[in-house]
Image (cartoon, rainbow, N blue to C red; front, side, top):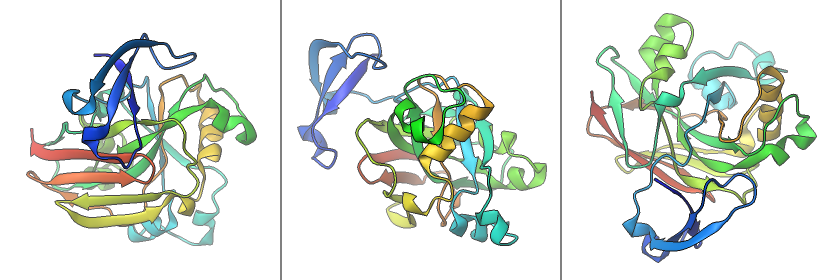
Length: 255
C-alpha cells in the first residue's frame, strides 16, 4: 500500500483521473515519487487508519426528532456536543464490505461528513481549530440500532468491524460549512441533507474534542447524520455522497 494524490476534478469521470504517488505520508511537506497511475488501475483502501475515531451524535435536529429523543428546545441548544468513540478496527474503505453481525436484527446506515486531523490538537480554540484539519471525506456511521437502544450506550452498537466505512479519498481543499450530503440504498435516495444544518459546526467539534483528548494526525472526527437513517440488509449497496468530495460505496453482507 502507498499514499497518493488523486489528480483531476472531483466530478470528472473516474477514467480521467490519475494518482500521483507520495513518498512516506501526506502530513507536512509532501514529496512525490514521480510514479503515476490511472485511478482505474488502483485499488482504493480506507484513506486513513486513525488512532481513534471520535464521533458526534445528535448533531442534526431533524435526525434527533426522527429518533424520538428531542425533549425540547434545549436539546438543539446544547453547549456541549454528544461525543463517543468508534474503534480503528471498524474502519474500512470504499468498495469494502459491511458485515452484518448475527447478534443484531437491525443495522442502519448514517451518512456523515468526516474530518481528518492534520496537526496535533490539544485545547485548541474554535478560531484556530480548522488550522488543525488536514481534509474531509465521506463516512458511514453504521449502527446496530437494536443494540444501541438495548444497551443505553453506543460502544457495542457502533463498534463492530466494518462499521466505519470512510472514503473514497480525503479532499484537502474544501469549505465544510454548507455541503449536500446524501445516502442512496440500491439507487434509492434515503438521506438528503446539508452540513449547514449541523447544530455544532466543524470548528466547534474539533475544539470541543481537543478539550477532552489530544487529537493526532490521521484521527477522524464524524460530525453527525441528517434525518433519513434506516436499515440495511444483506445484498444492499450503500452510496454515501458528499458535495465536493465524492461517493463512498459499500456492499452489505452477513458475516
